[in-house]
Length: 573
Image (cartoon, rainbow, N blue to C red; front, side, top):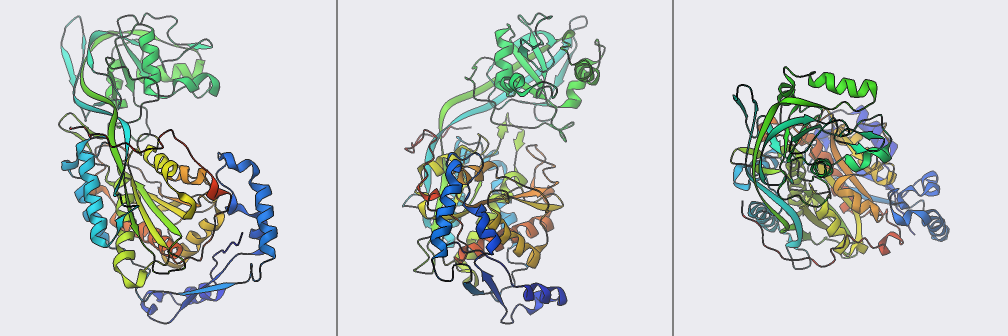
C-alpha cells in the first residue's frame, strides 16, 4: 500500500530558529515540504498496526510485509514530495479563544444541568451543537444530525445523609455536593442503621473483610478502590461501586457508604456516572463522601481513618470493626435502563474532487456527570467542554476561512456516553462505514496543566510525527519522552486500525469531575495554545498528504451489539 509520510525540511526548521519573528513574516511565500517517509520508518511499518488490543493485530506484520513488497514496485514510493503552501493567516494563532469560551459558557450553564446522557437537557445540548455546525456550513452526515442509541441513565433527584451516635441522638447533617455525592447508579431507598467498617469491601477466600463482623441490617462503610498488595485475580471483581454494593447486600447490609480516596479530591466531591456493569440494585442506596468528610466518621472510634488504612496496608490482613455511630440515608433516584441519547454527526465535503472521498474525523464527548438534587451541578468545563469547543472551532475555521479549506472531507462527531465507557464512540465505530476514514483526532481537557500530552505514538508513530513537527514549528507545548497508547473515545478507532491521536492536558485535571470545573478555572492561554496545535494537526491532515491506513484495517468490523440505532425518548430531569 502506498504510504505517504510527512516530514518538514531541515532548512525550514533552521530558518525558524534563526528568525524568531516568524509570526510576522507569515505573509511571505514560504512553503512546507513533505516527504512521504524515510526508509527506516517504512521498514518498521508501525502505522499499519492497530492497538495492541486489536484482534486484527495478530496478523498485521505479515500483511504489512506484503504491502511493503507491493509498494516497492511503485515508482517514487519513498521519494515523492508534496508541497502545500502555508496560509497567509498565521498558524501561530489560528483559533479564537473567545469563540471557544463562548461555547463553554453556554454548554456549561445550568440550563443543560451538567449534560447527563439520556436526559432532555442533554438533548438540548445536542441541538445547540447541531445548529452551530449547520451555521458554519456543515451538513448532516448521511442525512442525519443524530445517531440515536440507548443508554443507562439514573437521575438523582434528592439525597439526605446524616450520622449520629445513639447515646445522644444529635444528628450531624452532610450537604449534598459539598460533603458527599451519590454514586452514579445508586439505588433509591431509606436506611437508618448502625455502621460497620469493612476495609475495601472484599469477601474473597484469600482476603475476607466480612469474616469477623456482622453486616446484617447495617450500613457498610468501605474504602474506594482495592488493596495494592493483592494479586489482580483476587481484587478485580471488587473494583466498581456496584461490585462493592453487591457484596455488601449479600452480607445483609441495607446501604453502602464508599469513602472517595481520589487524589486531589480530599476536600471536594468527585462525581461519576459509570458504577460497574453489575445488575442495577434499585433499592440499595450508595453514597460517596470525600475523604475529609469521612475522616470525622472515625472520631472517638477504635482508630482514625488514616490509621485504619495504614493498618490494612502494613499488616496486609483484613481489619474490620463496628463503629459506635449510625447513618441515616434517604435517596430518591429515577433509574431508566434504556434512556435515549445520541451522537451529533456533521459533514463538510472537501474542496478537492480527487480527495473528498477521504474523510478526516474530529470528535470529543460532550456528556458529563449531570446534576444531583437541585444544587450539586457538575459543569464539566475543562473536562469535557474544552475538547468539544476545540472541535467546533476547528470546524468553524475549515468551513468559513478560505485559508483553511480542507481538501479531504471532514466529519465532526460529538459523542454521548463518554462517561459510560465511551459508549457513543464504540457505537459510532460499530455502525459507521469507516472504510474511507483516514484519521481520527480526539481532544479532551485542554484548559489546564503545564503542557500537552499527545497520546498514540506507540500505535501510530507517523501520525504522531505530524503533531510533533507542527508543535516544534508553531506551539511548543507537547511533552515528549513517553510511549503512549490511545484511550477513551479514540480507543475504538485505534482498535480497528484507524490512525488516531488523543490530546490531553499534562499535569492538568485539577478540577476533574468536581463542581469547581467551571469556566473561570480554565487557563485561557493554555487552552488557546493547546487548541491551536489541535487545529494545526487537523488542518494538515485535511490536505491529504498523510496516508496511514492499511487495506486490512478498512475491512475490519467492530461490534458492540448495537448495530441498529434506536430512537428512544430522553428522560426529563
